[in-house]
Image (cartoon, rainbow, N blue to C red; front, side, top):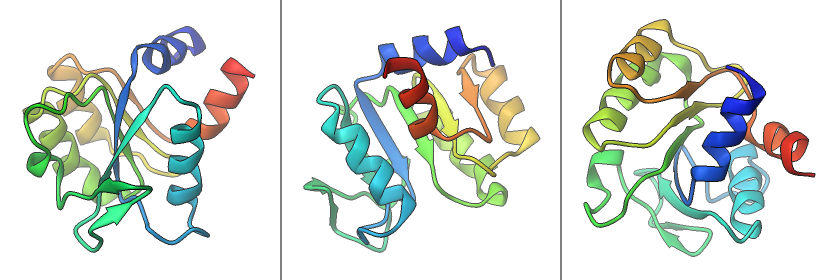
Length: 136
């Protein structure tokens, strides 16, 4: 995916569902979620069945549990590659605007599912690094 496409995704995004968002401050998902939240533009929706709340927001057990009135602009994933296919299916079902799998996370079948649904996908890239490079 080109830098211009990534810029467009990040500019169009308002609400980010972070799958695998940890409530532990030292974890990468928590630090990146907090970073995105402090940019003022993004609302973070935690998706983690093991916690009730992260970064002041109610956590959901899966993307499918997020209420319909919350429009998901971007699904950001901090789960291992073997989970991406199911998460991609849920992202399609929720009509998510875009999909992002963090650095080291990639699944060809998930990419195919998203592509067939017309959902732009970024895989094996760090949203923090890309945001920093594009906007600062």
